[in-house]
Amino acid sequence: MWWHVACDALEKGCCLELQYDGYSRIVEVHAVGTTKDGNPIMRCWQVSGGSVSGERTGWKLFRLDEARGGLIYHERSQAPRSGYKRGDPAIAFIRCQI
Image: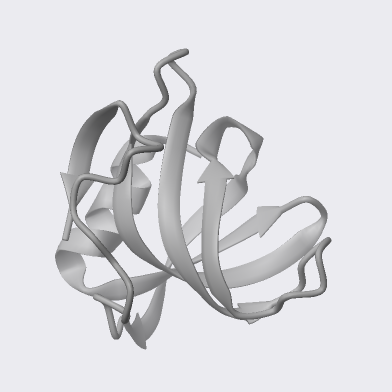
């Protein structure tokens, strides 16, 4: 998935539907950028869907090059969620954030 799709969802205030680790997920994008190693990454709040960890909702950090799909979902995002802090230390270069 390309970073601009995630930033577009953030800017429009909409959720994003994607496939990650074999699960369909609905997320609210909070920040998008790259790691210090240059990997595209996204900090988001998972609203619904599956998860390898079994945690179906909550904070997630996804590598965008491992995500598939990336469709803007017609559900309004409730971002920013409690606990969000701008300038996420996991994201070395931030392209967009709330």
